[in-house]
Length: 180
Image (tube, rainbow, N blue to C red):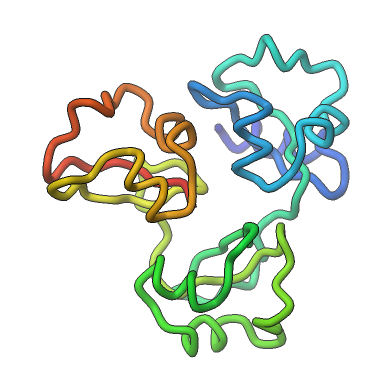
């Protein structure tokens, strides 16, 4: 989305929501699962949007909060999902609990809230992977199903983040994007 599109979307999304640009395969149901919200909440934030007629490139509003502007250099924002702990996030993103705690002063690791944005040490996904995903290089034995289980996401979410990738023809060394 261009700068003016971002600005327009931010002006149009109600408080407590963030703009999101529709990608191939998106549905209100898949977005509700990805962003830990409900179809009803997405519909309420988008009056007049027909969930059966979503258009690629269309901007809608997703209940949640925008990433904090204050993530320290060397970290990237992450929205907490059900079941996340600092330990599980450290394993998923190849860092340590201590490093996550240092990047999030004042955040109680025992009181994480779904939808809360925290900072994860590391680098944000490079261009080419959409926001909310991270790059992954296919290894021997990988399937979308095994990757979904490993990274705590769904096959549908991986497919939506990788339009044009045939899950039955994965190649070792192939780069895909994994929803985070």
